[in-house]
View (cartoon, rainbow, N blue to C red):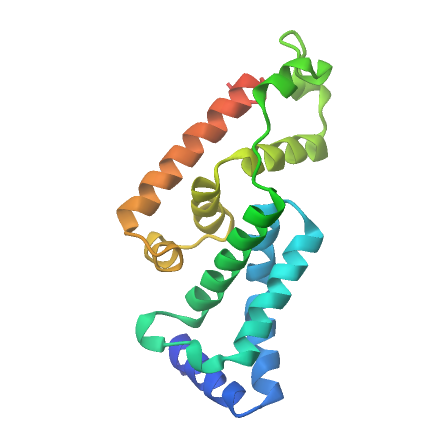
Length: 189
């Protein structure tokens, strides 16, 4: 049995030689996680598709940029996705958090409205998704990578180019901010 890192290195070597099967294998292996990361970061299906496409286009154009000494292929691809997301978010102003004032004016969030008894599962999930989108980018990234993509702190740290302790701190803060926001909307106690 070969290890995943060695297998990824061989895939990238074959990809650099123009091997379409190697690209297909890379795409099948990493397209889903990259797409989910981009979708959770942007909240937009089309944006997630664009980011995913850009990640794999960059891999095809310059496979030699992947340096196995610096980390895994997954980390490299998530790093590209992260950079593309940052570029898109700054150019399209997608990273604008929901304002609490907007929530106060929405009758669905009135203090006497019992959200849990009125909302079905889908509505609660949409509310949670919007709350995650409202988190600042650095906290949202840590939450998505560690909680939704189930990465370890070392894996997330490699992708985010920071220390494991920073990932832990950002994740802790993201959870606290999310809980506070959901409590304010009477979704959790």
